[in-house]
Each structure stands twice: as structure tokens, then as C-alpha cells.
Image (cartoon, rainbow, N blue to C red; front, side):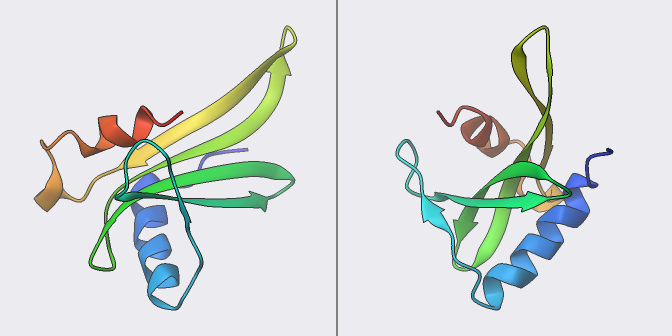
Length: 96
């Protein structure tokens, strides 16, 4: 299963959030929100830095089959060009 293009996922996520999709707070960074869902039988965690309803950075973690008994994830992230170089992708990837 291929990971969705992260930049397209960011744009889709922003559209859904504007329509009222619920997000959940994270402990480490107040501006980062979580969307937990399942797609094609795989659990997907999407973390997004939101400011004034705009997704400024996003990372997706999609559960994959275990390798040698160890849980694995595909990871993709996106930051629109206007917001790059601020460390926001790292901030999201460091979520516990």
C-alpha cells in the first residue's frame, strides 16, 4: 500500500478541518492537533500544526505489517513552501 502524497493529504486535511472535522489536542505542543482514522484496514495518525484554521505542517503515520515482531509505520510529512524552515515538521515528528 503506497502512502498518500503528503502535500495532497495536507490540502485535503485543511479542507476537511474547515468543514468541521474534529481534531484532538496533543500534550507536547498546543498548536499540534491529531486526527486518528482508519483507511484500507490500516490505522492512520495524522498530526497537524494548525493556526487560525490553516494547516501549516502535517505528518502522517500509517500502521504497516510487523517486521520480525516489531510494529512499523510509513511516515510522510508536508509543509507548504511559505512555512518551511521554521522547524514545524520536526515539532510534529517529535510527538510522543
